[in-house]
Length: 150
Image (cartoon, rainbow, N blue to C red):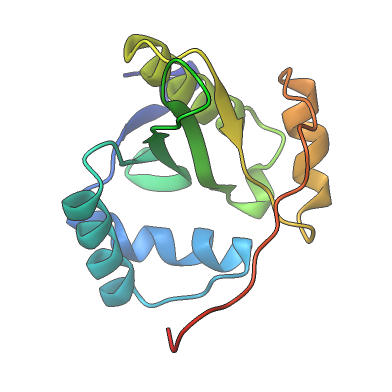
């Protein structure tokens, strides 16, 4: 799907792994290209609802978003979730993130979902303003803790 100013939003492919490195590092989750590609393949193999979208212009990755449709017992349809989204630092505020979110909303709408959520950790406060500008509202608190040896 094409976007503004020749920006292309598409599904990630194996060759995108090196371009995802700086984006994951921007989120605080550095990983090398080989690890990223292994994780992408595992994600797609184990979660049939998962998609990894990338925003590309002139062969350069500018941003990405990871999508999931999570079935829940307490709602009539699954919930669409963006579980990770990032844009290169110099391009934040340029509309790349907005186009990635719009692509996610279109995808989840096409699936017939009635709700979409974006997760964002406490270290990403700047992103909260972005989500609020797009119409997302604070809907509670997410709790987490490490478990196991992973």
